[in-house]
Length: 324
Image (cartoon, rainbow, N blue to C red; front, side):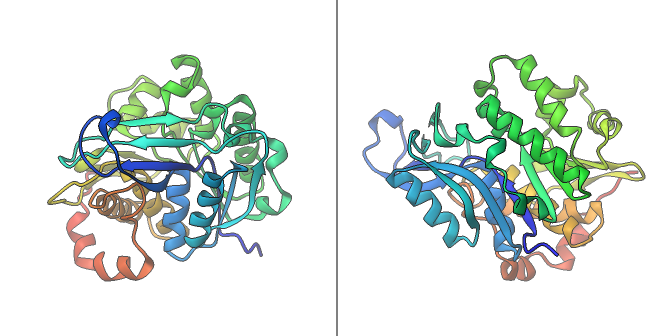
């Protein structure tokens, strides 16, 4: 039996978050944190008690050491994070948005250490993980990282492991939109659970209706699809069932970044605990709602104790609104 519950991979960047509102050019004080959709999900799953292995690459620099230290403090197994002596750790600047709007983010990641991940980065030990979570970000970083994504997803599915995939589109990292659509859909076809946002699903499939978007991926080989609808909740569809699950009301939205990552944390954790897909979407909506109530990309992701205390059976009963 593998000691690894979940394998996740991607780029974790250092992030400098503005401490005051306004144009980033005028901001004088920043707070140093980490950022990266893939590692946000890994951290969220680790907080819920799963043993999560993290596969990545950082530069031989202070930001790389900061990234590894932060991830290890969150409980991630970072033995498979390589240190690159030729390329730097990526970083980003993020504005402060107190009105609940999306913050401005400027990236400095081109040619980063993580973009040099390749199939040679894959250790046989990692392939014994029970579950693989992948997103569309690593394949956007470089051809070698794309090849690694394809190899990991193919080998894990062939080995009978469960695989989840969040498209997490980053159009600016792709040479063309059509290349992005083709490659993302090729990877999605290797996943058991596909988790797009509504706008992503529309772009990737050409369909407008959530039911048609979900059907597209079910026809490609997915077992189930959950489509994020923002504050309205989510639509899900399997080969046997479909429905809407209402969103969780939030009084004050502090930071929208990381909501989709929280959704993935809820979905994956619940499904690995053998909950139904509808129940998993309920948990996903709740974790996503919690994420937007804290400043930072992953600071609002709950621990197992917090989830047990706050996500009560009453919440679940109220959230579930199925329309067959």
